[in-house]
Amino acid sequence: MRKETEKLLLDALRQSLNPQENRGRLQPPGGEYAKRVLMETARNHAVLPLLFDAYEGEEWIGDTRFADFMQPIRQAAVTAARANYRLLFLAKYITQLLEREGIRAILLKGAATASYYPVPELRKSGDVDILIPRDKDFGRAVKLLEGAKFVKCECQSALHHVELKNQEGICVELHRILAEPFESGKMNRYLETLLAEYDEHVQENDSWGVTFYQPADAYHAFYLIVHMLQHFLRAGFGLKFLCDWTVFWNREIAAKEKETFLRLVRESGTQVFVEALTEACVLYLGLAEENVSFLLGGSELQQLAEDFMDEVFVSGEFGHGVQERMVAMRGTGLAAYVREFHHQMHLNYPSAGKVFLLWPFLWVTTLVRFIQNNRTVRKVKGLDILKEARRRSKLIDRMKLF
Image (cartoon, rainbow, N blue to C red; front, side, top):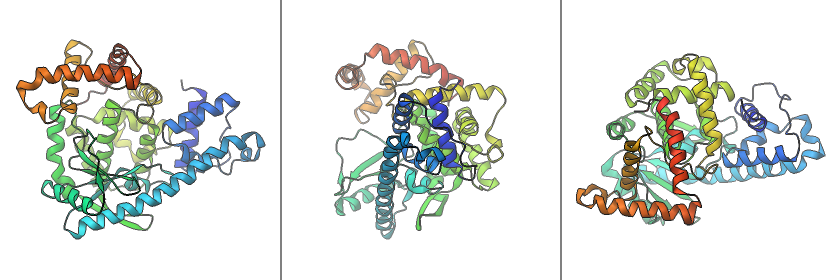
């Protein structure tokens, strides 16, 4: 059973993503507490700008009682639009720079997905993500951007991309592989082999009058799944991801692309995860069931989708909802804790972690780092994090990942 503020937010997002639906049906939040909770939840999930399109035109907006409620929504919409135009033309500059040197540059995530929204400017984005699918080109691509006065961020710990910033401080992520390594070696090997297919299956897409290369629909959808899965397992899973998924499939997609996508999720062991989040989008965000019937399971899937939505509202876009929510495990026993801890060691020390003899030292330093970060940064107890991981592992087990 969804809370009242959750229902209000989901209804508003459904309206924003499906403007063809009848206007004038949205209910206003009742009382100052409901307004505050709705606003905070939308902000945590990075969907506040979308409420502008949903609420604008509703009769109750003219009521002076809602003037303070709408002001930050309008401001968020203006801010998002300005930021998106800056990101759009920065992405065009970078891709043209790379393509002139014969480097394939494939736009991912934000700008690539925003074009599917009824009002693309309202899809909040924070950086530019570009995939360089050919390993031989990656180092050259980084040097080209450095030559164009982009500065590489030396403090980053991510393994799958290099982060650079321009003189305005806007972040650009050049991706060498599809995702940060998962705890599953099988999944990591599958993604490595799949990278060549991303180089082969690209299409041109017009985003607000600017043309980019992006993955073909099947591969774009699968990248969204991989990205969502990483957030679900590691940091936080926001409603923005479900909005992306809804608008992606609420358009005409060729049957061949659907067949290819289904093959990819089956081969990667992510089918139940895909079915659960797709069911959630059908239930709450207006994803047309006929467009995704090939991704929907039986009646038992509805309960999994509801439990998944509970987890989404707990987490927030990047784990802002609950600080204890930082790790996830497959399994609930001692072996699961050990396996997850070993995986964290490899993420923290990617180069040194390849040396077997260094493992005992790296285990100790990973543990010390874990304890220190909990005390000084997250302000939570390590035991609480492990308890939360154990709770979440039960949902992950039901999704039969990998």
